[in-house]
Image (cartoon, rainbow, N blue to C red; front, side):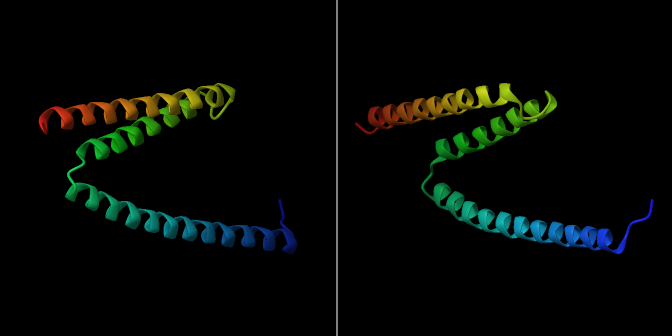
Length: 110
């Protein structure tokens, strides 16, 4: 199979664009990391371990959810139907944590 010069130029350009995308993703990840790192340090200083625990649990559950979805054939219709339910359950879990934390503070700070 022979590639013409025009096809080779297209492959070279596609490879160069791929490296630009990788560069932008790495820079974007670094910016997000710096933002989250400063937020986590601020949260630790304020001793909000409940919030940090909630964030870590949600990230773990997102990873598991997407992993299972990809093992079941990718992002298909069942994924799109179950994703809002998944997000709503995480939101309800967060509200429950907020209520429990508020009740604890109210009971112990009286």
